[in-house]
Length: 374
Length: 99
Image (cartoon, rainbow over all chains, first blue to last red):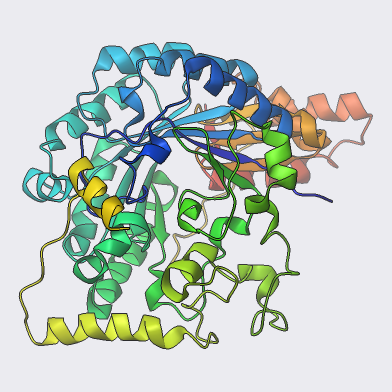
């Protein structure tokens, strides 16, 4: 049976008041490729086509999705279609009135990021004073009866706060906390050497997670997104290429995941030119790595291929330069030494007590400079 | 390192769908699903029937009785399936039991 998508991530805009150095948006987000944002009508058509194609879960993301003044209208359309709609926001300047309007429009779930357990670290990582807005919005969210997910991207500078972050989510009455170890794409790859934690940091945080899961049970779901550079096998990225998931970018390009646009060897289609079902079934970007016929060794004869789908195509492209090879984080990949070298360099620097480099914040001027450099 | 299993739930308890979960028809695949933040549970016809009876008023015993009557099932045969189904959803935080 042909797979049908269950998930749509709608990246409504790449504008964002925060400047997190691990942002998964493209490095050239400020460039011409993403300039002409889809209109309200175009997004509503995308939602209708997605629902007809089988999508049930919709994520409204960005950039910062609340910068779209038509957000309530988009939520109303999605809700009318029966999509389970999640808002993925930084909560910067998010008021209770806005959240109430989104609730009335049919929004199902709110996910608010935080960059650290206290204002000092959270604001330093975000590059924008936003901690107070976030804490206020967490409370509004609960007061309005939304289920709440607290999302934290973990890296070298905040992994020591895992326990405090879990306690914060518990105090706020959140349903879930997503502890997402940095995946190295977009800005995170650009800042990889600064963000990558040591093995000791990861082991300690994992001990905390296990202890807190035992203490909290079903009261608070703790999601731990694996740090794949430190794993033996790759993650089953997106549950397999083009099997369940699609991303529509602010200007209408359709990608099999939110990082795939960097793969220069793929041809991407736009919802302005083609219906979504055609793109899902026939476009080069979606068909190239669907199934397992594309797989080289060691994946082809590997019993794990139905489990991890060969790992991540973006990672293969970004690290090896070829999207069609085994994910280099796999210990069976001939390219694993590239990953080991990056990990070893971090361990070496930490052992030597070297002062860490500064990261590049995700911001439009830096984006344009990087895009110009190619 | 998982918490101890909760004690068995009394048949007088009233099962409720957690507000974060929503029943939804999946037309494309011809089935019902329970949607919740970042996930879904695929329901079979029995699952849909059970959740349809969980109105926040009926107790487990009353849900079981209604199903036995609807399907003409002998008394006592439905209860284990209903409890297993609801307990499974409760473990995911999708169903809560109240007075």
